[in-house]
Amino acid sequence: MRFRPEQHVRRQSEFRAIREQGRRVHCGAFTFSYWPRAAAGAVPDELRRLGVVASTAAVGHAVRRNRAKRRLREVFRRHQECVPAGCDVLLTARAAAVDAPLPELEQKFVDACRRIRLPSAPGGEGRGEASGSAAS
Image (cartoon, rainbow, N blue to C red):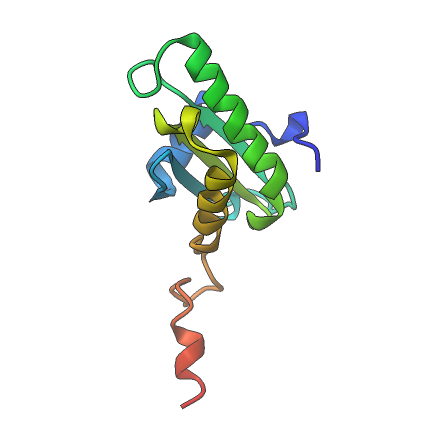
């Protein structure tokens, strides 16, 4: 699949919303933050969007930052179907994102996607525990 222009998180307000209102999963080489747009009252759509951040302090100078961002975008491109539709994802690179093998980054991304919890219908917690109690 392609990583289309409309899939890019671009506005500072969107980055801020993902950081402040979203949830975070630490993956070693990067931090995976996600935020379902439906939680903001936005019209849900099938689009999965990505923002990538790599700071000089965390990753290094321009060549290392750009390499880390390229690698994380590629991981998203290959595995974007793992992200629930209508979800914004922010990947914050760490120094290990530059040197870690790509299959390792991909596995960490897929594992983080499995941990995504979306808000459920009104009255539910969105954690999935309620479905197990209905059987007893």
